[in-house]
Image 1 (tube, one colour):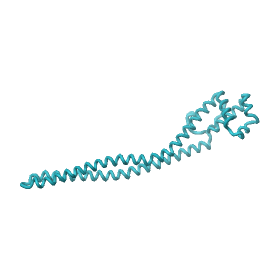
Image 2: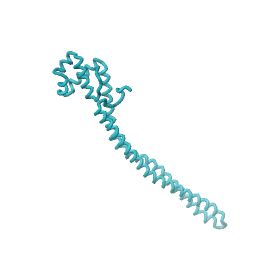
Image 3: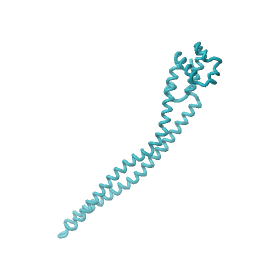
Image 4: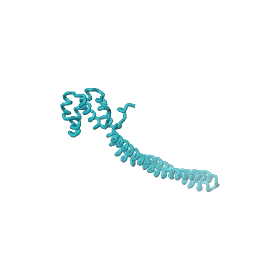
Length: 206
């Protein structure tokens, strides 16, 4: 694979720093995902208990309804006995419906709370990491493209003259500016390589 397509430095120290930041972001994200799952499981336990209450209440409602229908057959007092049983069964049915609605709400609440708990910590870590990595990749893409052409190397050399510390420029020779003006290929190549190194890239300039 062409190294130009990889969002990583070709300089060992910077590459290790990038890999370490990847590791930290992955570990941080994994930890908070587990925290979110723990929050979800805690609320889901309440939801499960509510479902058990709903199931039991529905069973009671069914039993009371059956008892009410059976009581209607009792001579003389059938209606008097069945009416409270039927009412109690209807009340149990209403309670089961309310518990069901509560379970549904709690299920959505579990998801929303889990997302709310993990979203901010993950975004705080991931967004700066992603921004820096994309900025590095964009710069790497541009400078490696420039390094592939003679005109691009001259532009990189000019950027090095404008942006690199004087001590590093002086290390290239007595007159790097004059060498750039004379289009000295050795000076231009050295200046271009200096600019590439500042971008975290170490490649041989033609």
